[in-house]
Image 1 (cartoon, rainbow, N blue to C red):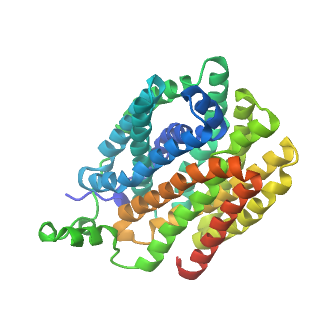
Image 2 (image 1 turned 120 degrees about the horizontal axis):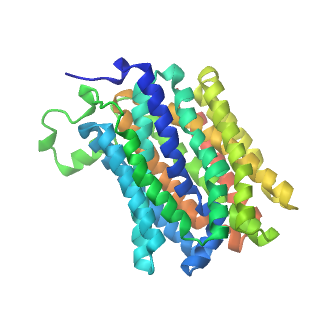
Amino acid sequence: MRHTEATSPSQSTARLIGVGLGTRLLVDTAKQMFGPFLAIFAAGMGMDIVALGKLLGARNAVGITAPVFGALADRLGYRPILQAELLISGAGMLLIGASASLPALTLGMLIVGIGTAAFVPSLQAYLSARLPYDRRARGLGIVEYAWALSNLVGLSAMGYLIQRTDWRAPFYILGAGLIASALAFQGAPPVAPPPDAGPGAGDDHRSLAARLRGAVAFRANGTSAWATIAVMGLLVLAGMNVSIVYGAWLQGRYGLDAAALGATAIVVGAADLVGSVLVSIAADHLGKRRSVLGGLGLSLAAYALLPVLNRGLAPALAGIALMRFAFEFSIVSLIPLLSEQAPTERGKALGLGAVSGLAGASVAAVSGPWALTHLGVAGLAAISLGAAVACVAVVAAWVRE
C-alpha cells in the first residue's frame, strides 16, 4: 500500500525536523570548520592555504554523486539512505583525523564530500514532501538554523578544542558523532515516492543518451527550474568565496589565534541565525522569490562594503557578519523555492541544486584562497560581487514562483 508524506501525522514531521536540525548541526560543523581554521589545518597537514583550498574543491566536486543517493532514496526509502550518508560522512572524518599521508588525507576528504553532499538534499527532499508549500519555508528554515548554530556552538567549540589539543581532534569528535547520529533516524517513518516519480515503463530499453537527457530534463517548468538551480551555484560561489578564507583573512591581518577565531565564528553564527529565523518567519508570507531578491540586494551592498570596512577587527567582522546574514537569508529562501519548481520531480530538482551549489563551493574553495593571497580583500569581494550580480539577473529574467 502506498504511504505518502501528506498522510503522516504532524507530530512525526515535527520530530523529523528536530532530528534533522540536530544531525545537520554536526554535518554543517564538519563542512564549515575549514573557514575559520583554514590556515591552522593547512599548517597541521603540511601545506599552504591554496593547496588545501584545492583539496576542499575536490571534496566539494565529488558531491556530484548526490543525485545518485537521491535516486536510491526514491527506491529504498529515505531512512536507510540518510543513515548510510551519515555513516559515510563519519568514516571520512575519522580517516582525515588519522591520516599520516596525502593519499589518506585526500581519500578522507573525498569520502566526507560524498556523504555530506548527499545528506543535505536527501533531508530537504524528505521534509519538502511532508510540508505544504505555504509552510515549507518555515520548516526548512528551522532545519537551516543548524548552519548558524554550527558557528555559534560547533565552530567555537572546535576552536577551543584545537587550542587545548591539536588540529586532529575535531575530526575524531565529529566523525564519532556523525556515526552515532545515524541511530537518530531509526524511528523516522519509512516513505515511498509518488508513483510517477520513478522511471516509466520501457525506460530500461532507452539508449544511454536518452537516459542522461531524462536525468536532467524536467517534465514541466524546466526553464525556471534550471534557472533556480543555476542561482544556487552562483549564490554559493559568492558566499563561500569569502567564507572559506575569512579566518585566514582575520588571522593574517589581525593576528588571531585558534580560540579567537572560534569566537569570531560566534558572531558569524549569530548573523546566520538571524537570517534563517527571518526566513522561517517571513518568507512564506512575502513569497520565496521576493525574499531571494531582497537577500541578494543586501548581498550586493555587503560585498561592496567589505574592502571599506577592512580598517580594524571590529568593522571587518561586522562586514563579514552582514555578508553572512544576507547570504543565509538568500539561500534559505531559495531552497523552498527550488523544492516546488518541479513537484513531481522534487528529489531530482533538489539533488541537482545540491550539485550546482557544490560546483559553486568547489570554485570558491580555489578562488577564495587565490584571491586573498594575490588580490587582497578588494579582489576577494569583487569576485563575490560579480557572482551576486549574476544571481539577480538570472532570478529577475527566468525564475518563477
